[in-house]
Image 1 (tube, protein in one colour):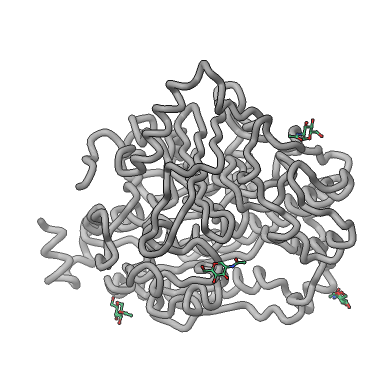
Image 2 (image 1 turned 90 degrees about the vertical axis):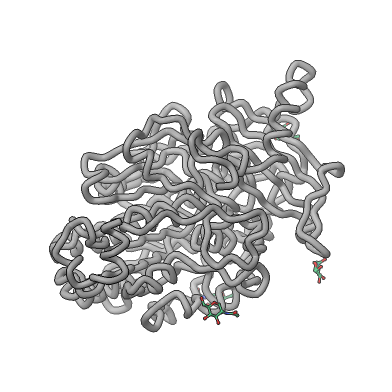
Length: 510
Ligand SMILES: *[C@@H]1O[C@H](CO)[C@@H](O)[C@H](O)[C@H]1NC(C)=O
Ligand SMILES: *[C@@H]1O[C@H](CO)[C@@H](O)[C@H](O)[C@H]1NC(C)=O
Ligand SMILES: *[C@@H]1O[C@H](CO)[C@@H](O)[C@H](O)[C@H]1NC(C)=O
Ligand SMILES: *[C@@H]1O[C@H](CO)[C@@H](O)[C@H](O)[C@H]1NC(C)=O
């Protein structure tokens, strides 16, 4: 009630009362960062790597955040996952399954997270990679921001055509890497918006999108010394799961890795159940960890400035990597699959006053949950759940606010979480479900015209992995005569979809 009055009528008065004061948001994104941080290690972690990744800054942020240990993306590739998170809706609602289509053209004119805060009077400022750049976002979705979008000049490094390179100090002193420029820009912007935010005159939503650890793995050379070559392990399972349907496989050479000269010169085919030579695997893993630690250092730099400016107590901080990444597990590379390694990704949310001592939840959560969470954490009324057809609904959610998990991180939560991945030029759609115990996937035929729809009667493959005994997903148990009933239950749960897997107490359809 007070909040309502304050919001609408007495904005100036509100400034003086803690209850009405809205919080700022600092919104970090990393590209292709799998949840390979010290704080993520645990019994169900798919493939603990050695040595432990050096991520002191993200670990410190996690220690003041709600750390979501089982957060899943809705589709493991850049534009679909970002579009989904930023609109709070799933790929079957955004209709973005690739790196070309723009949701406002093919899905609907949906309000995005930055646009929501802009519409509520915030200064909304974006930089680096937030949306997928270019046509896929109508060039960074200008309607989302109150200021011109910032991209770091990258001429010096754009033509790098090797999969990884450690950049010497002499070189980056003269030509700072793009993410270094983005961190510097973030610091400048925070300094610029701080006075108005502190006086209560205008809140900010500042989005800082780093390009690493995405390929090519470019990073300052000093990060390589954190990972002596001898210490890098090969993946435990460089082969496909037993009984895996071919449709589950992504050709990592054709999809992504093959564009780099050092990789194409290997003449690897990317064919099913192949991987790269051991020495290349080790080099790529080592470079990936180095790029991850470099990104971690930049998050730390921007966070230090937030604290220095006295904004830490009035600013919510969220961090997420846009999806997981396969580093040779199953022989796979990059993302583009429905496996745990591609769909499981790092996310944390720091809300001053609620998560200060650090909270960890093992509950299953989804990337679409972030939008409703930030809205409520900042002090706004909850978003309504989207109707079945939300094409013409500008503002709604297909996720669930994580605020109740900040009260009790062990409370009963979603029964299952959902991801998907298209194949064969979008004529097949792999739908996957993760419960506490299982991953279950069906690959039905799919049509976009006249309506977006799977044909559950025409399946190209089915997978069932039992995480309680097989966290690496090495044995597809589909077809086991003892598991017929389980398959039928999981199949029904998958086909009913996310609306039927809501946390207890949050009614379906409301
Ligand atoms: C989308 O909605 C915004 C208002 O939120 C409006 O300004 C814009 O014109 C709309 N775009 C289209 C293509 O309808
Ligand atoms: C990229 O590869 C081409 C040959 O394919 C080479 O001529 C060029 O110098 C390479 N660029 C860099 C930055 O290494
Ligand atoms: C995949 O490769 C592994 C190891 O090379 C081999 O043991 C396994 O039989 C292969 N699987 C298939 C289906 O070919
Ligand atoms: C993929 O589908 C689109 C739309 O149906 C079509 O225009 C395109 O030619 C197809 N591409 C391939 C490689 O089949």
